[in-house]
Amino acid sequence: MKITFLGTSREPLVCLEALPYLYIVANAALKTLLLGERSGIRNWPVRDNHYSPKGNQMIFYQEERIAMFIDGANLYAAARALGFDIDYKRLLDLFASKGRLVRAFYYTALVEDQEYSPIRPLVDWLDYNGYTMVTKPTKEFTDASGRRKIKGNMDIELAIDVMEMAEHVDHILLFSGDGDFRRLVDAVQRKGVRVSVISTVRSQPPMVADELRRQADNFIELQDLSPSIARVHQHRDPPSNDPHSNLYETA
Image 1 (cartoon, helix red, strand yellow):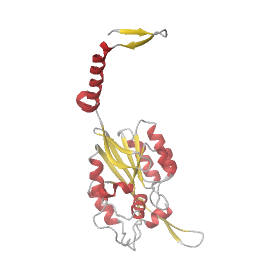
Image 2 (cartoon, rainbow, N blue to C red):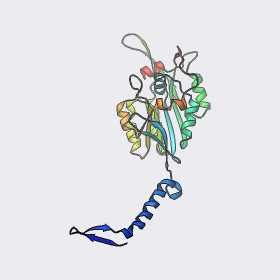
Image 3 (cartoon, rainbow, N blue to C red):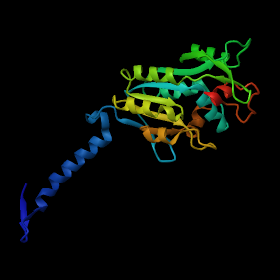
């Protein structure tokens, strides 16, 4: 390739004879970008049309290993605040289609001294339909004003499972807005694992803590997922025996 120097600055200028070569190089680079895997680039990202208010995209890679960690009470409260119920089969199918789904964990506390627990049918269904259930008995106590409270915090169980699974997955989906998980997300990211947080900022008040949202690699707005994961019958009044309300309030 011929290089011509012009002027006193001795800056090299590519002469016209070099333009065909530059065209060949640029055309090859464009083909590499367009052809992706066939040009030697593996695991080209799959971009969806779900955006968070900050513009983050829901990005998955074709061969990445995925694990879902669902804070049951937190996700339930977020969905109800947005006015829809979650179809957990559709939820599982949605993310199973994004990569290699290794495990889907669901965490909830159970009131075991009741003759009938309103959450038991959901727990049994999830257990038989692809979810790994992690449960523990709730604790009952009386607060300073004499009101009966039920506590069922599953944060420790979820954190332990996330740290153990981090060695076996590439991408963790955390269905919670709890700011206590920020340090957990940071620790997993330092192991080379991507973390996406699924919650909402569109409820009043927002269900996701700002520090958790900032720490995550991606924030996925729950409301944007509703067309893909909502139950068919919507806009009904919340049941009087809300299976998660007490647990979420006191967890």
